[in-house]
Length: 62
Image 1 (cartoon, rainbow, N blue to C red):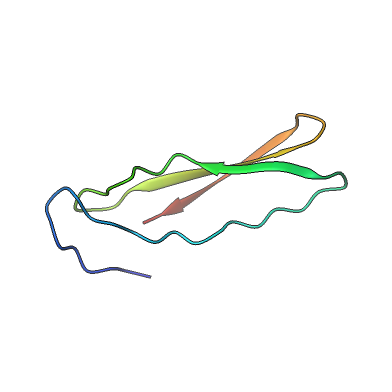
Image 2: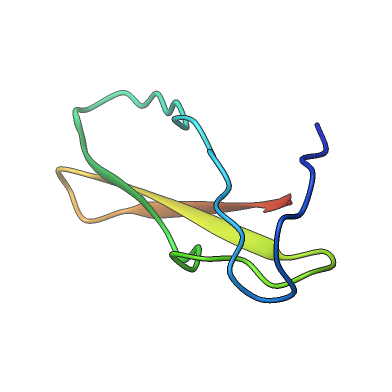
């Protein structure tokens, strides 16, 4: 989904929540998105970590 830019460097984007499943409990789901987005495409990396310390990543373009 695309969102209308209101600034050249300080755009707010609502990312929503990522969902992760695993055989053991997921302890965290984080991302590296900036607080404010510049014009153009930004690639965000989501990281899910389980209780055993295993992690998995996925990217999303915004």
